[in-house]
Length: 257
Image (cartoon, rainbow, N blue to C red):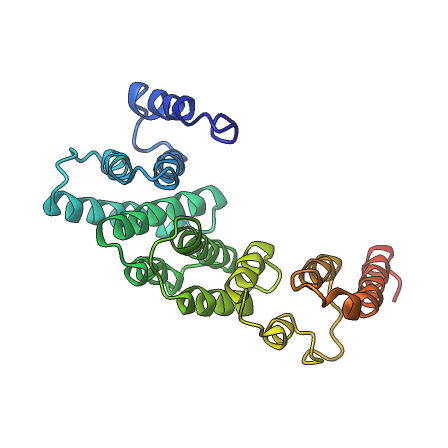
């Protein structure tokens, strides 16, 4: 709440009280999520040295700001994520594992200034066989959001193609995720490739016979207004599609065949 209000110092005090003063046992679930939220706060505030301090503290390593300390931290972060492998079906532990991975990826991008190596951290876990579809979608989104913040929000040097390609692949895998869709549209800005956007959303009659749900149709309304001048040509198609989706879901709910 303090962070949303822009009171970053007060937010820091909350994190310090919970994570440093209280010194909860390392086995308590949810700690990694808090550590990452604190590190993310510092990162978006441009305090990279504070980010490093927070990440090193999360794995009980003294802040020596040395290459050896960074290597030890990376190993401990990976170990912490790997210990949750067998329990990945539990949502709480899934998000805990994801937080350790995000801390590892954030340390990579802070110390190496390399978006590609950061993405490799996420890819290592995305390709693990124990990942459920929900865990894979969440991890995919986490990597994409970090990439977006690195290149677009914080304006670090990064080839635009990296974000566009990553977002395109993610949207192909998880077309119903509105966050991924939003980042995909951001990456396509200025490209003038409306046909590609339509292809990704399945609007070129690729999925004949498949009825999209209401959420998907609502996304189309949003997309139609993304590029100025396109909405007038999309109104009727989107209206009829949304009406069909509502009717389809009504029939499913009432049991009408």
